[in-house]
Length: 264
Ligand SMILES: Nc1ncnc2c1ncn2[C@@H]1O[C@H](COP(=O)(O)OP(=O)(O)OP(=O)(O)O)[C@@H](O)[C@H]1O
Ligand SMILES: [Mg+2]
Image 1 (cartoon, rainbow, N blue to C red):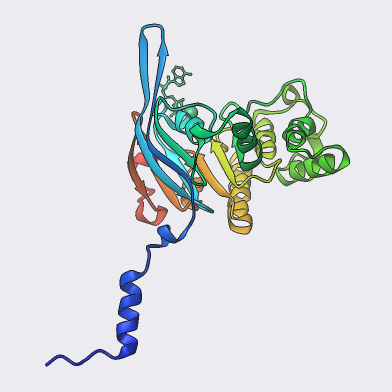
Image 2 (cartoon, protein in one colour; image 1 turned 60 degrees about the vertical axis):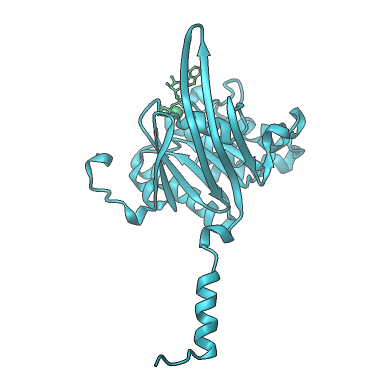
């Protein structure tokens, strides 16, 4: 005869049974549903994304891996509201961004998301400080307050000594750091970073990874980053692989053998 379970044991079992997976308890901040993107140039069609679906949770540090041309930047453009999918849906904080009008989209891009572009996209005629304070002015922060915040952010990325330099007067790595500083200008909830350490030396790259990790841990910022940088992959909560426009695998860093050929 089996022994009757104690009320405590029953309660514990029920709790376990009905416990939501950790992922479900968190807020889904970005959701992509079957997102496809076709680029047409003359008679040539490129299927850059062939139906990408993913949920990204608030405070998550997600790394995206994939060979050149696999669709990483395209996915960034879609989930960042910079370009419209050919089909499928993107939700940010449960809002279908296709429903937003021009001004609402501009607000979202300015306040909620910080972008670190693969090609930096810094404004060449502006100084580092002006590049960083420009998005602040779109969000209504100007004058001394913006200046002070801009300098503080530039110091944070190690460019305190270059605030008045223009991008052409900076090294590639310094431009990348300036692009990271600009992405942080309006204290975004989400940072989309396209290969943010690609042009940085080991030490600066590691510092930038720590900075992004700190934003995640201390401020709950969601970080989504395309990267091949092992240090960044190891620091992330989840890694997602794209190949030929499709998400082919997701894994946590502890599930991965970083010594395998895939990473070398
Ligand atoms: N604006 C565009 N017009 C036409 N084709 C494009 C455009 N942008 C990207 N593509 C094509 O879409 C595919 C995916 O490009 P994407 O930039 O997303 O790749 P990626 O994974 O970011 O590559 P990389 O690692 O080199 O940055 C490529 O074949 C590319 O040539
Ligand atoms: Mg790219």
